[in-house]
Length: 197
Image (tube, rainbow, N blue to C red; front, side):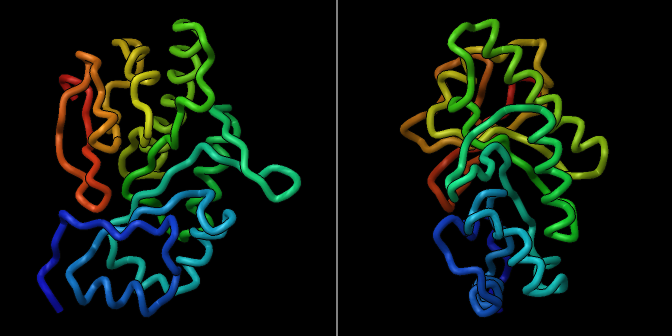
């Protein structure tokens, strides 16, 4: 087994959820997993927990919330506080543990068009994730986005002050409120933290 390489994350978006894959990743020194509430048709978390808590406990785990099942087998995006709270609670039940990091998944998909409306919606959703940390439902929280301009444009001092923003390099925030914090190597993305966080 190689020494842990914390620069590499095993992303499970299109990967198999198999014991052999997770064991092989550990043998290569990969000790971080990234998944989402909606991956694998909303079964990623429960599938991972069935692989064995001992194996999953050897990983630092990040996940995302924001997409929800819709009738007809499709997914829909929502920043509704009650739905996000329910997804966080379900995530803990399905994983049989609290994730180390929970991202608000692509919030730009559901932000209203006005800056005030977007700020209120993002603030309420961020508050749910901030509360999840206080309640022990996650170790930390952040925002994962392919288009960080909409969320970054409405970030101000009224929002909770400790989010991490995960974005691909081509989409780095232009907002003066964000600064690079650390690279998220598996995807070539960077994690960004609010100034002063």
